[in-house]
Image 1 (tube, protein in one colour):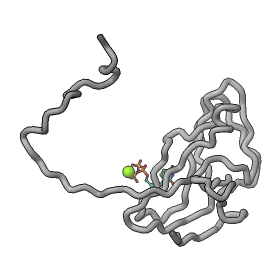
Image 2 (tube, rainbow, N blue to C red; image 1 turned 180 degrees about the vertical axis):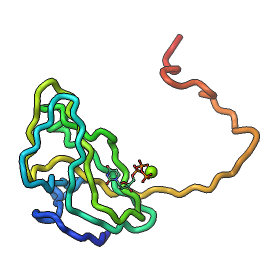
Image 3 (cartoon, protein in one colour; image 1 turned 90 degrees about the vertical axis):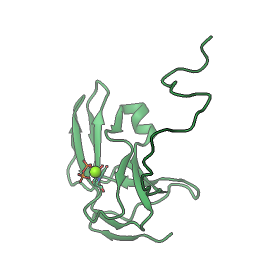
Image 4 (spheres, rainbow, N blue to C red; image 1 turned 90 degrees about the horizontal axis):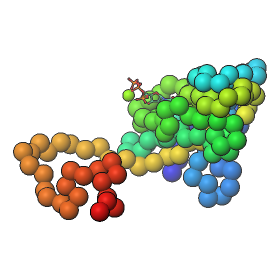
Length: 144
Ligand SMILES: O=c1ccn([C@H]2C[C@H](O)[C@@H](COP(=O)(O)OP(=O)(O)OP(=O)(O)O)O2)c(=O)[nH]1
Ligand SMILES: [Mg+2]
């Protein structure tokens, strides 16, 4: 699928790290090192603007290596980029470790996955169909 993109960043367009990767790695479009102290939250610009085809969204997800090694994760994961959004794609990060982490200019900070979604119309009713599960949830199964 082709997606229109305006690249105002200092870096090349995001790439798939391997041929069948689902996520395109997003780089921090920053000019200076940015120190993220424990529990700090930041919004990192990417310099990218996209036009997502209707019926699709883009999700901003953490990179697992950064999350597991350094506690740097996407605070609103998965971030949602709507098809009608024309602003800059930004990445909200949080440091949930107890050590500071320095984000370097151009560092790959998150990944973006394009995904189909449905748009529903409500059919309002009085009763829903019966099922074995019924209203049980939140750890309901497997109990004796
Ligand atoms: O990680 C993200 C999440 C969102 N956005 C942009 C694109 C998205 O289409 C818009 C709105 O996002 P969302 O609906 O998640 O935020 P909101 O707090 O509900 O804001 P709004 O009232 O603008 O919908 O912000 C980003 O750039 N990065
Ligand atoms: Mg919203």
